[in-house]
Length: 55
Image (cartoon, rainbow, N blue to C red; front, side):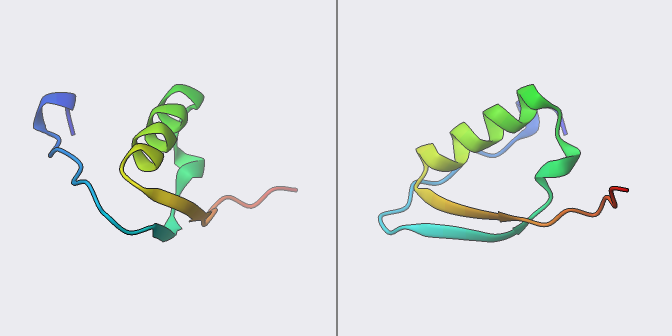
C-alpha cells in the first residue's frame, strides 16, 4: 500500500489496546513511524505477535 492510498487514522477519546499485531515484519524506520502513529491516536499498549522462530 502506498503512502498516498492510506486512510487517515481516526482519533479516539478512550484508551485503546492493540491486542494482535505483527511488528516484527517492519524495518526500524517503519516500526518507529507505526508506533508514533499508534500513540498519537490514543493507543496506549500494543501486544506484538511474532511469527519468526529464533534459535
